[in-house]
Length: 86
Image (cartoon, rainbow, N blue to C red):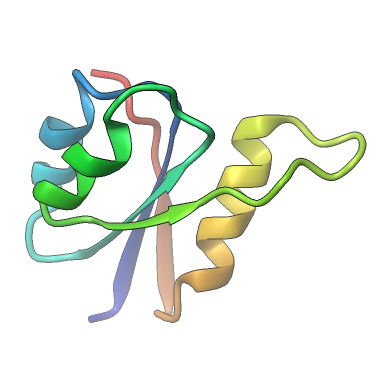
């Protein structure tokens, strides 16, 4: 595959399956950013690869940290960074 989709997500249980399904046929990495709901489980059930966001480095906000974590795992020529909201 030439494209990896990276989706940072925190407490997106209601939206994440639809978001992942929108990228069928591509590698989708959902970066679970300390969700307190079932975001990770729902994303995995929808076919996404799920990783946990690393602890926040000083001076970094959550979404940026999660995007960077996903980008480091992507090993394709192109990456698409999207939001999990519907």
